[in-house]
Length: 427
Ligand code: PMP
Image (cartoon, rainbow, N blue to C red):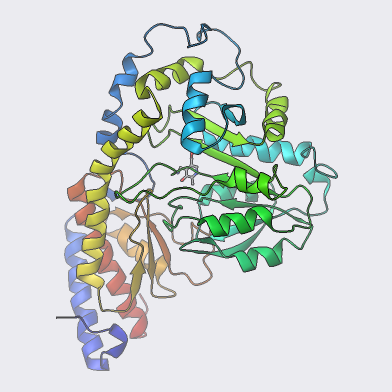
């Protein structure tokens, strides 16, 4: 039996539906839950997959015989760069293995662009009258807060199944103040979509008014498959150099959701000119990265194939949680026409779009019932979702049973908020 769309209920039916949801919500509140779906953190079980790291490295020499305990080696140890060059389809010289956070590398690039500009910049970005960035939405909140902290204007474009809306991007890059764009190309945070080769090719080859336009290609979820149908990230560096814009993309990745989120290794991959530019500034900030941690990672994985095999173990833990989210939402919401949600085949998030104007209310209701969700609007610049409908769900951290409980609760909140709105009742 299919449920009836809420908008098709008569006034009386809607009233009794609202009453039922209020009762269900009161029961939910009475359970005294304390659950957290706010951030895409690996669970304890996932972290435990890597406990062997705590006993590594064996020895203290890298493959080239360098003592990793000492200073030096700004671009990272070669065996780990080779491994991730293989995984990211780039040349080893194009890869820097850095510290524990790719977000820091993105921030460093942005700050250097502001302070110094790139070799192809007419002047440092901070000396421009205004700097604008294209932001596919929904997107990663920390990308947006980073730009906001430097007063960079954010122009949104829709994120589709196959990546950012190319026509919208093409229009915006006619403005020379538009200096760059964000993109999470594989299993995007939070939409789960993957940028197709066609979209990537269009972004790599399009004419931009700014000569120093940069794509911040944040491949945080490149290997984070949830199914056997593994998405292949578009080869942006080759596409860019092939179309005469070799310095346009800067790729970022890390092992934050492969090994330990707080103690992984981050990577930057780009044209040789961009790598030299990055290291040319980085040399004033560091005498070298944590090579002990890099060697530990190289030994733990053994090879690129070792990384892939390790990701399959993450998948075994994560896939049932994503299935539980879909089951809970489907059983409560299917046919009601008050929500749509993504069924991602990778990454860390489910994107839930509720009835327009009710996302804030849903998050508020959930909070009052002990279920913490990412604030409504977080996936938009300045936290402002113009339709107040988008909620990012992060099911990785809680154990499976908690995901089920939390999602059944979220579904109740979605229905209550929708029923309130449709019946014109103030929540
Ligand atoms: N980029 C995206 C899209 C992310 O979702 C995250 C983690 N939530 C990061 C970057 C952070 O990466 P790191 O831990 O390497 O700084």
